[in-house]
Length: 307
Image 1 (tube, rainbow, N blue to C red):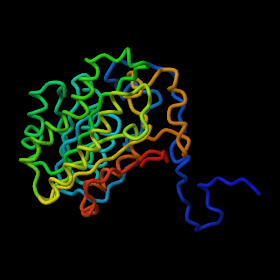
Image 2: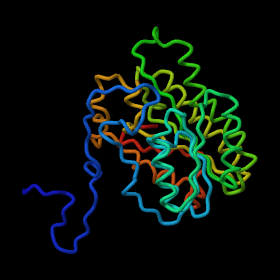
Image 3: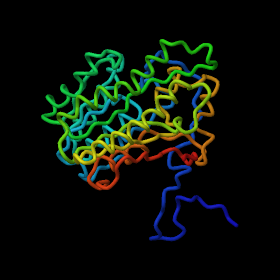
């Protein structure tokens, strides 16, 4: 049998489908290191957030969204997608990530939408408590909240995982969700959507990510419980659970350096995902198309098995 390119039609007029195995290149990142939190501008190879590929269809026209960790990685891809679907977007990020944030805000504005930057540190309780108010004030309202910011530091042995790192990981990854969501509720109207970023780590934890994986399991429980609480108010709460996605998180001590060249190669699709591949899941959960989806964790992980 002749070998054929799966993306090439056999005859004129035949539909050509994207093969998910090679829709995005299989990357073998070189060993590299960035200080936390890491910059997308220095990531090698560059990540795809949909800057040139995501095309919107107006599914979020007139909506107003706050995205934490919106300067790079998954958050950046979601911000671009939301803007191209018609939403105004505020992104929260660390001051050290200003370079990446400026780029994403520029893409949002090029889409004809309002882009707002809200720099600060989620370890700062005052910033956490004020974030939703700042976003609502600058956007003129708020009806989508994406709790996406995360801290991930790989530690080989439990003996080397100190309480300070554990506390910071829990503060950024799960405590901030309680704080920001609680503050956002006074702004969120009927029909609003809350989307939390969890992870395949909640189900299949890496031995080097004990604190991170524990927070992601907690996010699943938080999502499902809050979904039941808020559903009668017409506010839907759901989550997205990414698999191995190529972002600055991985090179700023999120992965052991010697594992970077094979990052994501162990999933059935055989490659790491790109941030743009997560964006449609968030658009779906934010839009009215998912009106009967409540308390769901949508796995976008290249085929990794989950409960």
